[in-house]
Amino acid sequence: MAFLILEITGNEMRAFIEVHLKLVMTIWIILASVLGLLYLMNYMKFNNLISGVVSSQLQVMSSSLERSIIKAEQLGLPLKEMDNLPELLQRSKSRDPQVKSILVINQNGDVLFSTDQRWLDYNDSEAVLRKALKGKETSWTLEKEITLYSGQQLFDSTQQLIGSIVIAYNKASYGSTVAQVKLHLLEMTLMIFAVFALLIFIAVRFGFGEVNSVFKLINQQLSAKGNKEMPASLKPGSMAYEFAHQISRSNEMKHQVESELDKISATPNSSEGKRVS
Image (cartoon, rainbow, N blue to C red; front, side, top):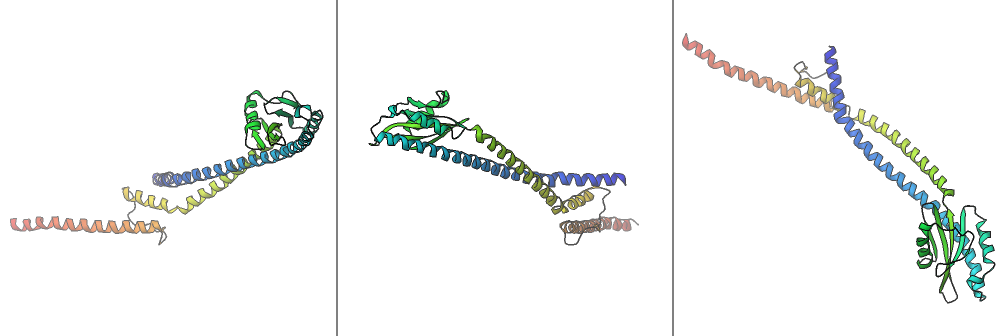
């Protein structure tokens, strides 16, 4: 009896591993892929959103400086001779502690005024100057690993480029916020995955429970100790019940064929015995 119980339990476990677990794992992989894609999209969306907000603030700052420079230029004062410009730059910089530096460059890329001589990383200088002096956007933004650059191109009364305003902003100020949001998104994604994974497991386990009964019937038929009769525990109309019914009919037909073959094989022997006598 104990061996039979262990055999049935082993058959159910094999049915679970071969059918249920494979189906559950497939659904889990699809769910993880979808949630991972949503997580990446939400992270990128928030990162772009907060970068856009900071860029808008910097563009307002550079537009204010541009108006002051254009007014002085319209009065006939050359850009390099605007003595009050360093004070304006320093005042604008003091409004946001995360602004690393503000500077004004001419059309050749030479720094005319700056709040900090070490305004630009060496690796970023070429990209920033190309964006500020050769780009097609009047208000431009360039995002690097640790610094967000924003600026405004400057034009004279004849619409000739005379330089550009460059603002270097430290991304560490909102980098921590992005990191916190990223962590919260990851936690929510894992929580959603865990909840739905459990629901999927339960649904597959009970929704495909008849598969265990089918496997049990197959093993009973293949086993020499198996019961050839239909188990009374099966519900009429279920998949396992229909499967067991088909097996019972097959067994009945098999027994009929065997009995007919036995009769046919026994008939010549009886007639031969009568002739000998």
